[in-house]
View (cartoon, rainbow, N blue to C red):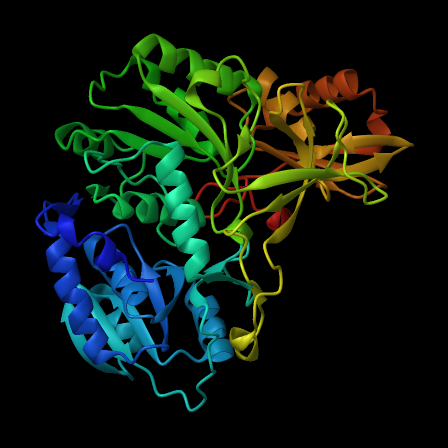
Length: 468
């Protein structure tokens, strides 16, 4: 795959503008790609330490173009975790922000440009790579785990094309980054917009910072994406009152949005002449598997939508049979060219062939309505059986957030005891009473635990495994 063969006609267009006031054209990235291709041999493994800056984006696109395989990790990853991954996979090169140079001073710097360094490591072992392997990503919630998702060139290309098609993207788009580049959702925004020659607005600021909105307004951003937590925070920063005349659409993925919040943003979009598009995906499917068309955002609020172009879903019952009736819950299985090759847990796994062959068991439980729109009801592993009652932990979280929107919460547990974590001790008794009333679970089967902060990854997704 070579992006630059496809968007050569965009050479003069601006590919990215950073919040530092720097811009770069597609032609300049193509030239940078040629330079990196002369320094790093094809099929090398590179650890790409990502930030939402021009150097990171230019390096990533150059690696794809030269068939160099990057592992995309957060530039702010814990140093111990980074060392663990390096020792397991033994990359030949690192691609790091300039400010990290002292951390890797034992290695040779072979290039410096766009405030990024290309560093040659001294690992003895070189693991062979599958010809299909395009890039590696950590799975959601496991940024320190050796378990990686193996994405192919076909995966990246097909998913970028499908997203560009259903979002009707063209070269006039100006998306602003709200998600990390090493997160599959954030990366898919870059891939799909680069494919059409759009201009990406790169910022490391968050939506709670004034300079984020200043940057967005000055550069006339046309879109942004966010996970459920992003949209919860948008309400808190009074997003609905903002004057954003250039904003055309908003996308949401990275977990199920509370139906009430979905409805609010759908109504806002309709009233303001904008589009709100809820999507569904996983790193294991490159990024996107489903989308809810903007014209159905209010009518079907709470739905994850329909399969993306080129993909399809089945619902499977406990006996492995396909469910064709509406409103019957089963496990969601997806089929498409964007289903990734499988996992890697050690260097020897990087040569593995396609282990999924276009079929992904998502682990999500869902149902379909009479019109063919899908609704997620919870994770297969996010159910407990308490006193004979089947409890959906995601639904417990939604009940609490709906009643007390200012209380951050997350639930987990076993079939013996459900744990509900909140961050405000004043709501302990209120939350306990609410859960008992709405779920009809005896209060002896659960406990409310107050903690300082709900653990989340850099994209805002809850890290349930890190709950105490």
